[in-house]
Image (tube, rainbow, N blue to C red; front, side, top):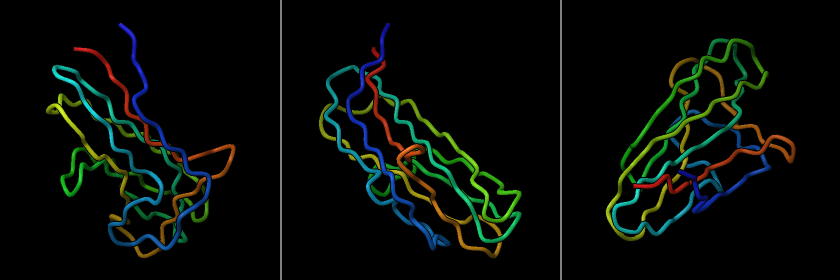
Length: 130
């Protein structure tokens, strides 16, 4: 069994001033699913906050529907911490838009999704079989 990449997007620029729920710019894909296939939607990002102890939250969504969420406590101010998220789905045949979203779940600081050429933020959709 092999996994085949259906779609992938990388972002190499940071996105700051995150407190409430926002779409992560450039981290959305639309894929066409064929009958009976399972897919895996994955994301990886780095977060930091201006305040130690804040909690960042990363989401995978299809349109306005939340599919998966993970939280990450940021122990130090202005220090990157990585988060990986994924969900396995058996969607209906046709076109499906997936995106990464983020918010500050707890705390008082401002969250930044950090990205650079050597540490891009990524959304990846793979066909993982039947």
